[in-house]
Length: 522
Image (tube, rainbow, N blue to C red; front, top):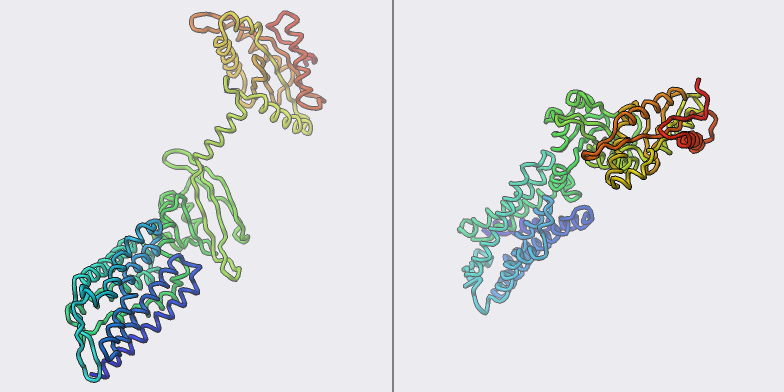
C-alpha cells in the first residue's frame, strides 16, 4: 500500500517534470506560433497543480495539506479555459479572443481561487477536510461545498467545449496534422474522465488521478512537437486559411506533381479531386482546361513568373493571373512550387475601360487626339523603315457654327455624332478615326496610297451630302470639307497633318464640300 502511493507520487513528479520541460520548449519556440504563450501558461499552471498535489500527498499535518491544496488551486482552475484559448488559436479563431471574451472566460476560475483561499472563513468551497492515515501516509478526504460545484461544472464545461471545437473543425484536417489534433483532444478528454471517476469515488484511496493522467497528455504533446513541429505553425489555422482563400492555389513538388490544392483551385480547374494528388500538373491541366493553354515556364529555372491568361468557362471568357512561386528548403534547395490562380476579370475590364476612356472621345466614342498622336508617331517610325504607304484625311463640318446657332448646341452634338457614325461605316476596321477638335476629324489610313485616300474621302463627302441629318423632325443639311496627304519624307505626324490641313484650307476657300490634296494623284 505504501509502495503504491509512493509510485503514484513518483508518476506525478515525472508528469510535472515533463510539463516543465514542455514549458521551456514552448518558450524557446514562442516567436513561431501565436499559441505558444498560451501553451506556456498551461504548462505553468499545470506544474503548480501537479507539484502542489505531490506536496499534498507528502504532507503530514492539516496545515501542510491545507496549504498545498490552496497552492494547487492557484493553477488548476485556469487550465481548462486556457485549453479552450489554445484550441481557438490552433484553429485560427484568434479574432474571437477579444479582451471582453477573455475576461468572461476567466471570471469563474478567479472566483474559484478566491473561494479556496478564503475557505477557512466560510467553508463554501470545501465543507470539511478530513485527514486519514493510510499506512505511513496521511491523505485528505474533501467534503465539497457549493463553490466547488460551480468550479467543477465550469471545468467540465470548458474541457467539453474544447473537445467539441476540436472535433467540429478538426474534420477538415489532413492526416499529417491529426497527431497534433489528437494530442489536444486527449489533453482535454483524459483529465475530464479522470476527474469524473474521482468525483464518483472510483479513484484508488480517493486520490486525485488527474495529475498522473497529465503524464500521458504531456508525453503526447512531446511526441506531437518533435514529430510534426506542433509549435512552429498552427496547421489547422493554416488549413483554414488555405481553404478560405479567394484565389486558387496549387502546391507542386520539384517535379511538378500536385501535392495539394485548395477548394477554389478545385472549382476553377473543374476536375481536381483526391486522385489528382501525385499527378503532373500538365496532365491535369490538359485534361480539364482543353481550351486554355498552361502558360509555359522553364522548369530548370527557379524563378517567379506571372502571366495573364484568358480562361474559358461556361460563362464565357474570364481573365486569370497565373503566378508561380518557387519554394525553398532551409538549405536553399528547391522544395517545390506554388501556383496562384487569381481571377482578375473585374480588374482587367476596369483597366480596359480606363484605357478606353483615356483614348476615346466621350461624345462620339471615336479615338481622341492623344491616341491619334501616339499611334500616328508609331506608324511613321515603322513605315519609314519599311517604306510602306500611309495617308491621312483631315475634315471638318461646313458651317457648323450656324447649326449650333440655329438649332442649339444639343443639335450640334448630335450632328457631330452623325458625321462620325457615317464616316465609320465607310472606313475599314484598321483605320484610326479621331475627333481632332470640336467639329474637326482626322482619319489615319495605314497601307493606303494618296489616290486611295482621296477616293475614301470623296465617298464620305458624297454620303454626307446626299443624306441629310434628322434632328427630331428637322432635316439638317450636313456637308464637310476634306484635305488629304500621304506620308513621304515628313519628319513627324505633325508635319503630315500640316500638309493635309493646308489642303483642307484650299477646300474651304474653293467653296467647301469638296476634297483637296497638295500631292499629285498617281
